[in-house]
Amino acid sequence: MHMIKKKALLFILLLSSLVLFAACTSSTQEAVKGKKDQPEIQDISTQDLQSKIGQKDWVIVDTRLNDAFNGWALDGVARGGRIKGAVDFSANWLKVEIENREEKLQQILETKGITPEKNIVLYDANGKDAVEVADYLISKGMKHIYKYDVKEWAASKELPMESYENYHLLVPAVWVNDLIQTQNNGKPYRIFEVSWGEESQDYKKGHIPGAVHINTDEVEEPPLWNRKSPENLEKFALLNGITYDTTVVLYGSDSMAAFRVAAILKYMGVEDVRVLNGGFATWVNAGYDVETQANDKTSVDSFGATIPANPDYIIDLPQAKEILADANGSKLVDIRSWDEYTGKITGYDYIKAKGRPAGAVWGYAGSDPNHLEDFRNIDNTMRNGSEIINMWQEWGITPDQRLAFYCGTGWRAAEVLIYADVMGLKNISLYDGGWYEWSSDPANPVEIGEPKQK
Image (cartoon, rainbow, N blue to C red):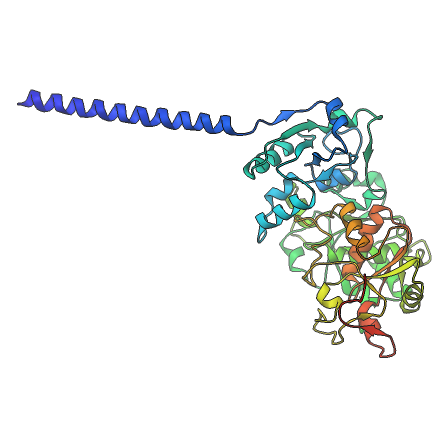
């Protein structure tokens, strides 16, 4: 009796083992099959890549940090910038945690022509970025994917690369870290966290080592929140240890305030003004040290130049009217949301008037008055300049024109001014008073509603 039970138990165990083995074998086969079904990421030679540039069914994609695309030589690349004709889709964008991320990434792919029917060449310089983007594209059903090491392309001076004329105005975190480590080779430099208010909570939570807080009230004042007088701007510079030949690096948790101060410093005559591309998150994500101890301002005795040394960089109401009167070669460009431009809302709790200066053209901004999504990538770095130019062309705005950017009080427009400067546009300025100043005088002509024609 015991023997029968024992044989039955052995039979059950054997049967269970066979079932388990069959299940595992099936799972392994399915996994192998699934792997085989996945598109293979192929390598492409420099010669083949060169022959594909400009073909309608091929798209060349720079997957590196935005800074490398702009012009910085990073990760051992001999020449900075991008392969001529390439679009950008940074692997860094896949790591950003934002609302509706997948929807926004899909929109980005479509905007850049990265679609399933295309042959897609992904290039990087670290052997990682292209693979990360490739895996993402495969998950979206794309199959014809190639990868390439841009160091090979950059090593040959005969092969075309391009970068923004003034890419140096936007700096990567590694450049700021090197600046600190080398102490700017003995030359004067300052790093500032910029935001509104005497007490910056962001600064207290953590900041770049050695950084000092700048309150935007130090450079602008009520009632219109225009820049301060040259005399008061000089006092600001002296208090913060800024001379005309000081290298000044600006950043913030949101970069808009940093761009506002950057524009004013350039107007004053500071020759080397930089903004950390992507803001403080760029520094943190790069893994560099953060300190919480506050640093005191260090003053200097002389700015070393007459302020403003670059007076045309920021203009006032009379010049804005001159630009509006020149219908052929000039544009007053509105950097506010469409609802603000058409007079549906004001966008500010302290600005009651709605509308725009008569004759101003819309230059995009985004739906949120506190953001600039039309000009930023999803990691808050500068958007592809070609895409910016294409947006503007819909409204007759071209790089060869005299362009003055304005918003409500100068913050959003200052950021766009710097981006235009990065791209190398020449005849550009910030209309400082913006809609707040224009609407304060009933004699200034105003338009409301959609324009009759673009």
